[in-house]
Length: 466
Ligand code: ATP
Image (tube, rainbow, N blue to C red; front, side):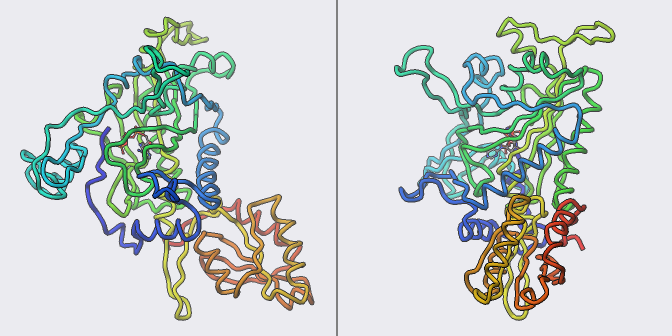
């Protein structure tokens, strides 16, 4: 567990975006709310509203498209969150999944991750031999290893042996199913198993909105291969995963691949690189891509007594597969896509705030807007909306001035607006407005669905790059 989260670069690539602006937009437009808000909220826990669900689902769908649908060698799995407690003994999480906790002994009594404090001082070129509380300057307790797994009990009685854990990563659900999957997947190595699901970590210092929370979603692949192939496959996955973010509109200069130093490597890993993104609080991990060797399968074979080796059908050679693990956060990814696409500009004296999201990520693809709420325009607009909605997420909005409705759609990142006006009633043409260029083109109403489908499938580049 390590991060360069504290290496500050608040310039965020020169953008006007701040985390406060993202949080405010998310609340204003119903993307993401504080959890249990009516009870005062539960710290660092968030609920996704309509547009937030649509956006995060699109992030997950694009991941699935790239790592499963567009490849021949990866299959899906959805394992349970609750697992046999032996899993966590075998994986090393019971013993080693911890972060160094320090507490302020001065006035504020706040808790911190010691490694984060050291990294922050290092980034500022300050000495790290005597670390004090960054909040009040008080002395700190000695670092104590704090296990991040949430414990709960299985069954009605809390008794010996009833303790189980909420999984802190989805990966182990894949390892324990390796044999099952291999039996049915009809695949040879190298092959991968991909899974999206919730994970839970009792983080010492959650924060930065949905960047670090105690309940979050991961998108993980365990890619199994022969030991000799592992280094090459690691390289291939690092390149593929970087490209995924770029293809979906993240500016390449806001992404970097950072190899872990020896002191950062997890107990299982022989090499790990993080894809870092330039968040408003500085460069921070978006995804980790680890070469886990054969640690996990070896451990599970040992603890379960099952044979988890693979036999090469060509050579009849038996070996324990090695594993490359690209492990991404769905929430962190969603945050990065919002941050990178956030933009403000002034148009005719009015400020326009927008998410210049890749159309495939945008929660809503098209908004159908009658210019006035009379003269048959709403009915015509509704008919177009009903034609579009089986094909894509669309909205039909009659409320308020056209300017106000566009502003709302810009803020939720809708790439295309279709306006029905008096001319539509005469010649069945509509205007198609592009969120980014503000171009308005006129086309027959019958061509709208085809034109939008064409635009959705076309390659796309962030307008912030030009
Ligand atoms: P960090 O150093 O930030 O604690 P980590 O190295 O422990 O992260 P991994 O175990 O590699 O993270 O998890 C893989 C991915 O899962 C991370 O890159 C991140 O996107 C996501 N993730 C991990 N912890 C959290 C969290 N507490 N909240 C949101 N996403 C998380």
